Image (cartoon, rainbow, N blue to C red; front, side, top):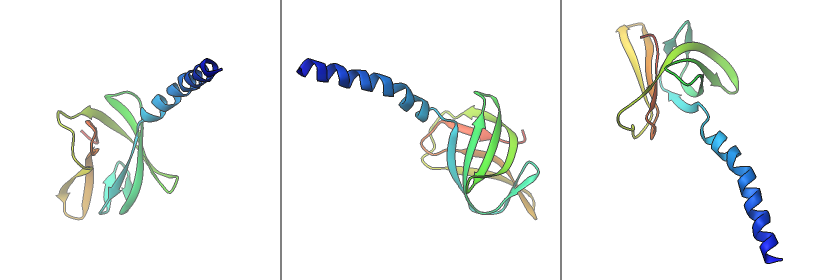
Length: 118
């Protein structure tokens, strides 16, 4: 009887393992935007966004969602950094004093980064 319990437990874990691996490998992160920034033809207001991308890179389609609503979908480049950033970093171009343009998002504790407009 004890053997049956172990086999049932191992079978259940074996069936659930692929779901855990799939959830871990999702191409999404949350970021906090502190100022108004332009990405593509859309302007992102300050706040929390979910950033998702489709594709394995380097060219990907990046979607910004806020409160479950799509705010912008823009082309981007997925790159791998040499070192993991300790926290999220958003790089903007301030060449135009009236408008900051989103150039890059480095994800904290990840080697992945998304680059825009290059």
